[in-house]
Image 1 (cartoon, helix red, strand yellow):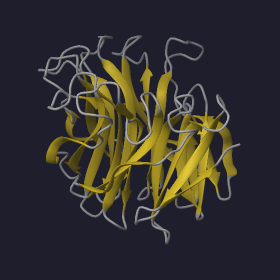
Image 2 (cartoon, one colour):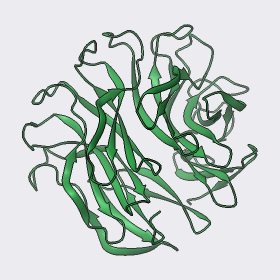
Image 3 (tube, helix red, strand yellow):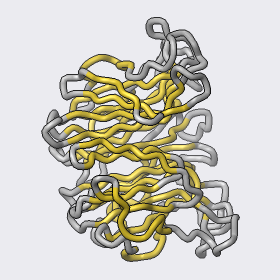
Image 4 (cartoon, one colour):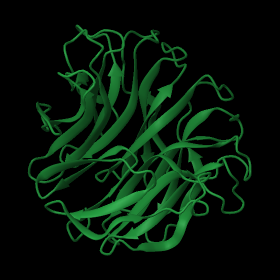
Length: 383
């Protein structure tokens, strides 16, 4: 949320959360390019309607356009937004089919673009080589250092990596001007053996710990660390020193445990993470297929794991959050979970997801408020 009490919504089919004037307001947007709408409480539009942010390739050329889901972070120091997205552009030396991460700073008071237009952030592989690129992106703002951390899942050719080996990378940016800071495109994850395309990481998310000046990066990963086997998807995490970008604590620590170890029928995907300034801890949510209780294979629900600031699990292990339909019925599913923390008097998390419940095939948006003590209350949002 900006200093004026407004916030920016961007979309490509993502649920975006903000805590606005003590009310949780979720929004589902489905635009074909990276567009934005600035909103102030209570949900009043400001400025230009659906103003365009990206301009990938020539206008009218469908060969160049953003893909996947963009991400946004608010800079409270400079009253700006940074929007990042994955795209194919023709700005030299890039060529058609070469997918990288781009960014645009936005003045939070006016919605006007600030600084370099559609500046490039990642450089996976050699320029002009379409065999290396990016699949998904996330961003967080660090007010302590006044910088951003942009992370993404990418395929790079930096030794010992090979083509088709997806890992998580990061780039720190000076929030005042967008300039890169520190190591270029530093690697965060190492799923499986270097040089093996059988293992990889995707769909990263990141949270900033303002108490310890750290980041926590989480992702969906396929790793070979025993007792895990190939194609057994779980959620992993890595703490980073926010001043240096260096890794802290256990390397690529496992967060979820869906199903029995070694069983590829169960798994976790699409994580999100939030940091509690009140408890100095994290909460991670994901879409999971588990065999706990009366759940069966391919019955996807939303799960939660709380972590201390040092990455140690606390509270209920892999706590089930959603209850879509009757247990044992795979016709009802939960998908696309997202989580945010309210730092006001309530000190609680809000989790939302898309789900099919009582009416098969009808997706709606559901939510759950989780107190700092771990108690929760489910509720429907859309109808």
